[in-house]
Length: 176
Image (cartoon, rainbow, N blue to C red):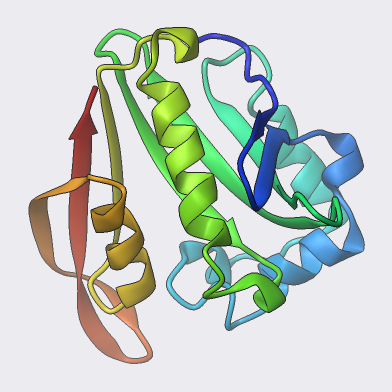
């Protein structure tokens, strides 16, 4: 996959996540039960050191860790991941808008669209298919994927437990 450039939209700027992005605020997002409500991150304890280890895990791989910033203020508001499989031309993506002040304002949608469009372009390494998944109870994420042109490809019935109840994992994909 190509090196990740800075990508700008009307609301957000995406750039590679680096050591400077590992802050107490970032660790706080990972420890916020509302932010991680539908994520398996809720089962882990996060520290500055564990976050540095996670960032290091991207070195020497085709995977990308992306920092999302509010274009107007420059403030970090979230992250994205892109796990690429160059052998198959696929990439599985995820997003976390950690700063709750930016929820429901279109920031996540714009960030998602920017990343998908780049991945599926010749400049992004000509990924032929982008995939993602979420729990069916995560309505915001389901809408985000559908609004980006992703198609529902499958369901893993009762795959995970959220707040004591089994939830389906819904899987989406979009071809170049």
